[in-house]
Length: 129
Length: 177
Image (cartoon, rainbow over all chains, first blue to last red; front, side, top):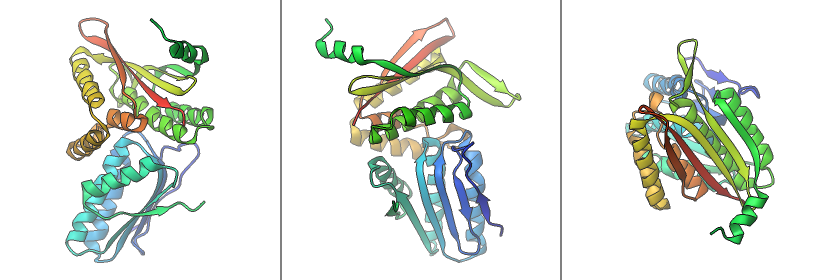
């Protein structure tokens, strides 16, 4: 399976940086996410996770370091979490870590909502200054 | 009768950003960066304003009934926006054309959001996001998110243009922290 590597650019700050590593199972999304046609950006990422899960029984770790995501992106992240929850329910080893700014309580609420909606445990980690 | 506090707020009022035209993502991104810059002395407010700005601007971009087609495939909505600074708060307003049939639905949605407390909004948000068909429809929670972030009621107005269309304007107030 190929890795997915998308670098961020100051010209298009609305696209996040993406690093999905097929060797380690670590999938990282960072930066900001508010592009147009959000689902077109996230669909290959969701499909990559589905494929990874289908082909291996390995651990998968989703690491989110988004400082901002628009509501359309939240729907896509929820889709991703639902796929991971399904894998976990079938015995898959899943870890989700969400990095947040200590001064951003709105993001903490958002993560709590994701936990309720997807049923998956999300580990909150503070961004190191 | 106008009270003293309103007069004081009006005296302080200044426009930080005003725009009328197509809401391209490139432009939204530049304005977003301007907004972060204009409000940098208010850390939490700055974050909230940016987030509300993105949601409301993208609503104009996706749903305005006055739009441009780019390469016959991409639909870019046209509308207006302005960001004003008052003594103790900021206001962000967007205005765009809507179908008369949608104006009633929008008005009902704003009314429901304004009537709900924070906990009810959180439930509504979860419910709407889970039940949204996704894809091009997004999460359909932009207005809820704007009110949850600002912790103030939406001000909205619908002005009929003709038998087919109306202008829908929405203002969100964000207190300075």
